[in-house]
Image 1 (cartoon, rainbow, N blue to C red):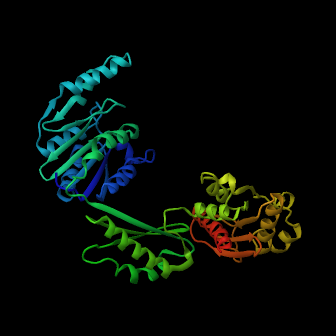
Image 2 (tube, one colour):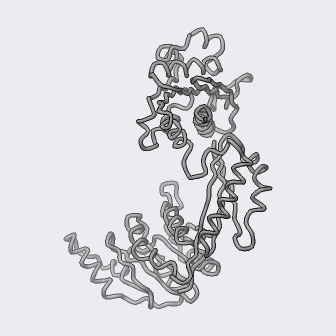
Image 3 (cartoon, rainbow, N blue to C red):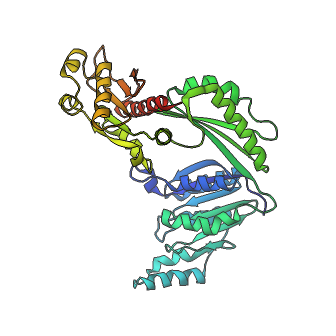
Length: 418
């Protein structure tokens, strides 16, 4: 078998085109295909529409070495994948006695009679290899289509994932033509996408060479910028060296705004720094409503370095629980640097923590003023060297809260750096 280089994924199911169902299978498949050295060039979601699915499938077959479909292998009329693929590849569908017997046996084990419509799941395009499904009635299919391969997988993840591991992954790379895909990711906070691009573009535009071209992608979300470097080829060691060179050059140019080059999240980085020092962190939050503490405690083992937190949304909680003087709130407002400092000092003292961070702000959509518009957020760190900063974050309520949680964690990170 020739080595494969590119893949496309087609998720089939009208339910995936509603707000109620997410296509999580493509994330799993992309990761596993990348592990096998394949670059996923496109992902599509198609409803239970034979004409549209046939069009998307033909386009994918024109571009990719491997096409993987998910879903649409059930017994009902709206399960169209099997028939459409067979039609596009001009392969007749034939009932497979072994598959039919396995479906019957599965129903018998459940002491349920098999419906006649389940016979559709035993239809196999001529020449296809059947992929066993011990977790459901729909078998998968592997079809060699000239210079292309088409793989049909069921939609439920509990069926798809073990089927892929057992029936697909071992056959993706030939021993004589191994192809490798390697990636590096730099994670950045405290800068906008355009600011990162301005610094990084002159560097990544020169990365790689004729032997190892490096693709660079920049991804932005509130409080986080990611730079992805990717290279593919037969020499894994050479790929690793070139990507490491690129990562090092970009990290040096960007400086301390890079908090991770090994895949760790910002909260995991903060946790590792706290663990190294043997410190515990306390959090006082107003506008973020526990989001900062939630991110920290999502990290396994965080009980070793998180003391706890207080959501002091109301002013009487700021004064009564955290000990913020009422005069500070009256004189400066709840969203102010003196109040943020008092909140951080208060939670640190009450929870006997080594370091603390506080967040107070106006997330919106209401509550802003000319002096303090929506997006005004104040963050303070209580430590041997204290810090406080006022931010003006863009976006709606959710974006302001996400920006705020990232900024709070980053201020803690910076306070913990050697």
